[in-house]
Image 1 (spheres, rainbow, N blue to C red):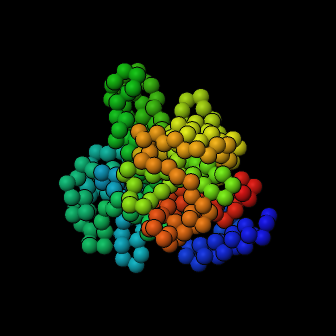
Image 2 (cartoon, helix red, strand yellow):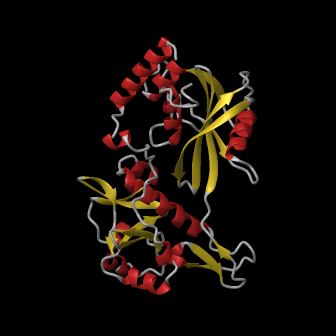
Image 3 (spheres, one colour):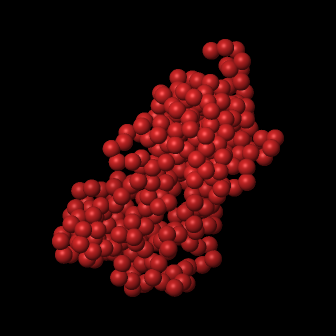
Length: 337
């Protein structure tokens, strides 16, 4: 590694860490992305036991996390936290909605419950001003990381139940089973399971520059990694190469996996990768992107830190795109390229 790259990477890493100090645990453990790292034991054996589930739902010690129109209940007094309620709190609502079993923590069963049918759930729960229903993205910016993993599971599964109430085989209504981890058709008995849509999100690099794109819906000056759904019969690597070629006209060769992030909007798994570009002439598919451009490592570092001369930026740390770009800026991608 030449001295320019060595010194530059030291400077970039030092400045980034100054703005985003690492958790001491990150020295020994891989980074845990927002919406990942749930501390729950998901209790596969328990969810298959209807007697156990019924007892857990009625147990006074069980905890319940309400969601209303996919917004999550939070308590905001001394820091934001998830708004867990007791069985007695939920019983007062008198709603005929089966809770979703999220898992166990220290032997205590935790559930999510959809209270969207209530007109004013905060009022009906008789909660004070410290409680409110919050957009999941906004809440995730302030919650502890492990709580965002719980939130991702709760939002994705409640959202799936709201949108998959009928059988795709015969059209008849379906009923939840196994603690909300399957829906079963009452007519043809087809079992339907919660879906997760895999998305490849990638940063193509060409020496000391990287490829970023922007969509018209992005905020002013924001640029990000390219991304797209993985198609049937396609590997992650093939999806990375196809999406980069389709959206920006850039051919890629080597692809290296970076990390994944659950993204419960509505139910995706972001699969982050770095790719080595084999061509450099950009041809933008304007049906997918507003623009695509090569950025130097200096530009990318400034964008990460919100210090770019022209006000350009990357997505914030809540998104895996930030970490994909940062890894390359710090020389931790594709063998240190």
